Amino acid sequence: MTRRRRAARRRKAPPRTLRQWWTIARASGIGALAAAAMALLWVGHGYWPDALHLPFVAAAAVAALCGVSILWITAMDFARNGARGSRLAPIRAFDVALGLLLAGPALYALRALLRDGWLP
Image 1 (spheres, rainbow, N blue to C red):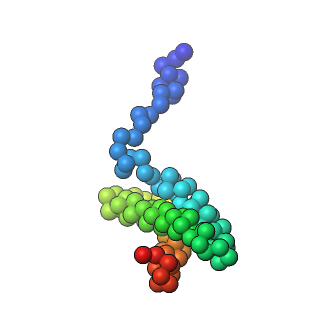
Image 2: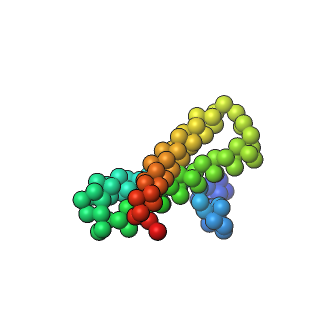
Image 3: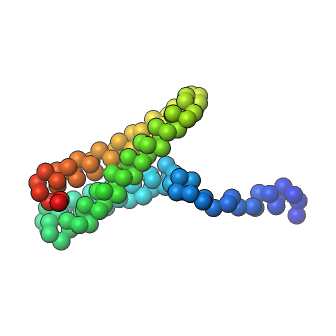
């Protein structure tokens, strides 16, 4: 086996801190699942509000947290690295759009529940 093949098979060391572990990709996946669950629970929340209240609030909170964290990670990337070129501009625009898409409806739903007295 050549040296190049051995080097290609090495695995990267596991992330040691939460900052290394929590990435935009991870937040996007978890946030998309939480937003899909929130959308499904929203339909049922109108019919069975007592039974589906806690799962709906939990899904909305996770989706909002993921959306805000995507926006935060993107903002920190802009602050640290500035404009790194025209190749990353569409990717960062997509990150901002996805962060707003996840955080906006979830925070709106949580605000409406708070206003209506469903949250303490």
